[in-house]
Length: 323
Image 1 (tube, rainbow, N blue to C red):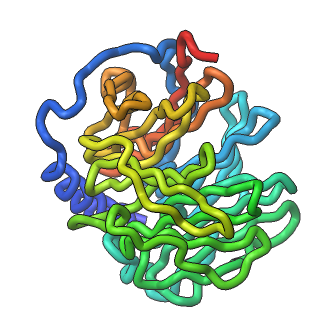
Image 2: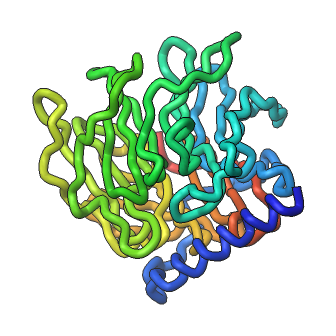
C-alpha cells in the first residue's frame, strides 16, 4: 500500500509541475458568488487510492463515482454513505505503462437509461484499457478495447444516437462506441484536442447538438458540432485562459458552464461569451477538483487531492439565482 501511495504521489507531483507551468498569473479573477452553502459531504480514503475522478448522478438522489487510484467505482447515498460497486482487474505489470501517469486508473463515468453504468479504464495494457459496463448483479464487462498507448478520460452519452463519446487525453482523439459496445471509431482528431506537454482532451458533454470537450493543457473549452450521420463538424474554441481545466457541467442557462480547474484549485463560471469568473477556491475546501455535476441548483464537486495529498472529498454547494 505504501509503495502504491508513493507511486501515485510521484505521478501527481509530475502532473502538478506540468500544470503549474501552464497557469498564467491572474488568469481567473476571484469572485465568491454565485455558489453558496458550501459544505463537504463525504471524505474519502487517500491511502486506499480513493481519489474521485468523475461522477454520474442517479435519478433517486444517489451518485456513482470513479476512484482513480483504487480502480474502483463507488456509489454515494444522500445520507453520505459510500458503497463500492466494483473493482476493475489489476494489470499484470501494476499499470506502470499507463501513459502520462504510470498507474492504472478509472476515469469517465455515465449512467445509461437501463440502469447500467459505463466507465473508462486506462492501464497501459491492451487486455484491459477501454470502455467497461457495470450491470446490476453481473461482473464488470469490457465492451470496447481502446489503444493501450492512450489515456481514455472523458465519457459522454448522446441519447439520440445511442453513442458514447470518449476523449483520449494522450492521443488527442474523440472515439465513439455504440451503447451496445463494439469497435471504437475515431470521431475527431482535430488539433484542438491535442496535448501540449501533458494531457489534452479531457472532459466531455453532449449539449445542444454538439460535443463539448475541455483541453487541460491548452486551457480551452471546445464545441464540436454533431452533424448528420454522426460526423464531427469543425471545432470552435468557446473559451480560453482556463489552464488546468478538467471536467465541466452546463448550468441549465444556455451555454453557461461550471468547470473545475484541477491544479489551480478553482471552480469557474464560464459565460456564453467565453469570459469566466472564479466562484470557488481553496477557501471553500477545494483539493484538486476533478469533476462537477448539477442536480437542480445543487452542485456536486469531486476533489481528488492529487497534489494537495490531504483530503479527497465530495463537496456540495448551491447555485444561487438559477433555475
